[in-house]
Every structure is written in C-alpha cells, then in structure tokens.
Image 1 (cartoon, helix red, strand yellow):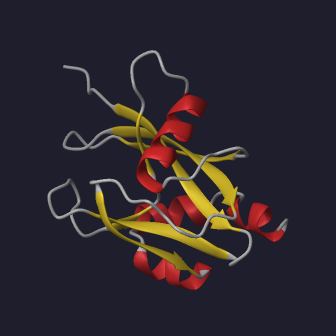
Image 2 (cartoon, one colour):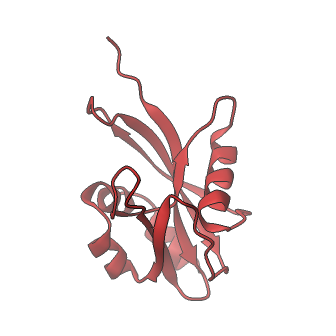
Length: 138
C-alpha cells in the first residue's frame, strides 16, 4: 500500500524591526503538544502552495503575508507521520501575534534561541536553507 503524505507550507518568520524569528508552541490538545515550531500547516484541496502559506500564517499568527521566498523542501517517509513540506522565508514588522487554538504561546527569539528550541528536523531545514542569506538582507 502506498504511503499517503500530508502536504503543507511552513514559514521561517523574521521580524525585521526586532531582528528575531517567530516560534509557536503547540497546544496540549494537538499533535506534537508542547513542541516549538514554525507557523504553517496543511494544504487544502485545490489550493496553491502560495495560498496555503498565506492562509496558514494568517490563521495561526494574524500576519498578512505580502512577501516571501522559497527556503526548502522537507520530506518525511516514516509511515506514522509522512509529510511533504515547502518552507518559506517571511519577513514582517508585525510584533503582536494573534494565536489560533493550535498554539498556546509564541516567542520572538534570536537565531541561537531558535536553534536551541526547535527540533532536529527544523534545525536541519533552517541550516541547509538560504534563511541566513535572507535574514542578512535585512
């Protein structure tokens, strides 16, 4: 039987005024409860990846995405949690985040704090992407 993947978009959100990255903490009632992650989520049927990114970031943070750049593609082939994610870089000046029910906390963190708090897969994707190149543009 073929593996069924969930497909979605995630964002490395960078606040250009604070010079910090946004991370969200998963709700205790959700998958991966208590983990820190990038905002984003599953693509809906008929939706483009760009539209998925914009919708998910707006739903989870209240940030309207006007500008974004492709960063990485991440694939997990494990049968228990298979996914295909496109990661994007999203700059913003918005500081006050409007959390959805999916998260219980947010933080604006330095790059070092980000790399300490997120899991190994997110660290790997961040380090192997052009995230630092985009951050340095600001």
